[in-house]
Length: 260
Image 1 (cartoon, helix red, strand yellow):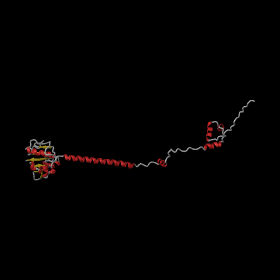
Image 2 (cartoon, helix red, strand yellow):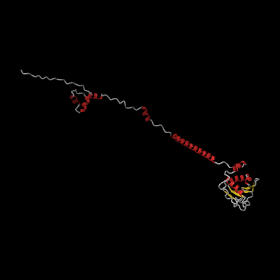
Image 3 (cartoon, helix red, strand yellow):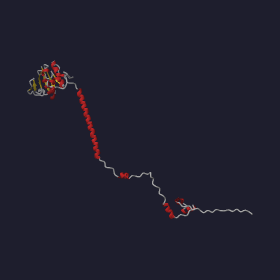
Image 4 (tube, one colour):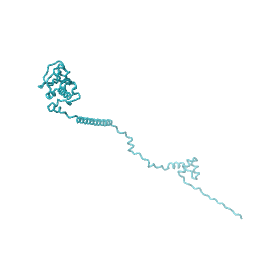
């Protein structure tokens, strides 16, 4: 007896899988329609209302904790206007700084001048014996500040007596007299032609000091008399002379000194 082969077929029921949100969105994006997509997956066709609810119930991602939040104080500081600038205060501060700098500079200038004056005083020579002697005679205040000899020497005193030239040079240098005349100054005067008189051309202040010093040292200088500003002193005090009609004739511009 021939054998028979029996073929059996296992029949499996389709397994229903639950529909998730991913399946719903995948069907919608695939373009084949929501029904077709789920049919292919062997799922039950979802209802539109259920899809809408499921789609909007997806979890919302939490905010990134690393992102810093803006502080309320910073926002308020940016929103508030800056404080007003006090222009007067700024200008006043600048002016005060300039004044301080000028004051310091003035003090430095004064200090430099004082130092220069001190150095110049220290470098000045000591008074010579003639000047010291005059001070001892009570005539130091009327003596000249110069030395008893100078570069001008006896210029203009040519032809006068030796003692006259010596005394004339001393007086000229002590009082800084540039112009001294001897024989040629006034040829008609009695003492000039004989070489015993000198004319010192000076201003008022210098002439006053020179005439006073000459009479105070009359004996040591060998002076017989002095004429200055229409007055004559022979040793007994000043006496007024008659008007001779001119400034030079009245000895207003020079001190005349006659010697023994």
